[in-house]
Image (cartoon, rainbow, N blue to C red; front, top):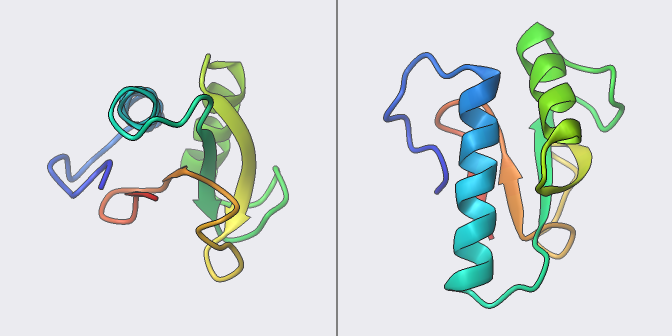
Length: 94
């Protein structure tokens, strides 16, 4: 888990921080050379989602993590990503 609900009002900046921490963990502890990070949303298109999701997408795109995609929650598999970020209570690391 990247965000297990410790913050009930996360900001897009918080999710980027979770992505950075998760990436570092995936590299250093799990041994992934360049873990892929994705944002779980209501659709795979970059423009989908609410303002929170859109703002998070922009920040992840500009961050140093290997951000690869916005993913529809019902349509991605463990093999697509090693790390995914989502709103509070929904973020998971694979």
